[in-house]
Length: 144
Image 1: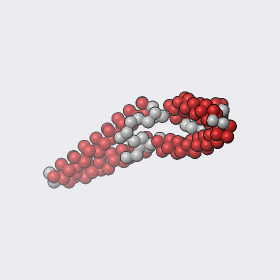
Image 2 (image 1 turned 90 degrees about the horizontal axis):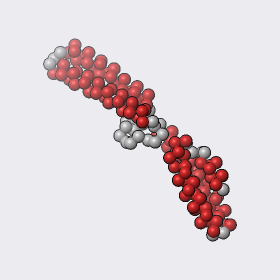
Image 3 (image 1 turned 180 degrees about the horizontal axis):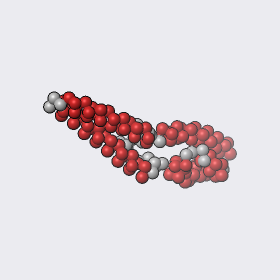
Image 4 (image 1 turned 60 degrees about the vertical axis):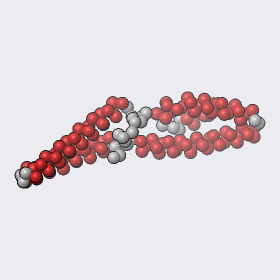
């Protein structure tokens, strides 16, 4: 039974298996021992429910895993996202957001001073910096 469970664990994403695989196996072994002691019918029902549950859960984890490729910088780094990728994404996003804010402030200042040529220039720069920020979001698949 342990071999079948290990095989079913392969249905899960590698990162999930690395983080939770051994613990899942340990819990399964303990529960299987308890159910085996209760009789064959109880054990067979337990095995059937476990197999169906693992198939269902693996599908749900893959769905979550695919959507989790998108970084949410407001949350902690997901285990399957490397520290380097996460830090790089944060640095790039912060720099791009800062550039948008600076260009917007310069545009507003130019408008206040009635320097409309400068305001137009900073408006264009702000638009370019927003596009750059959007491209960074797409590059790291960041949901914001």
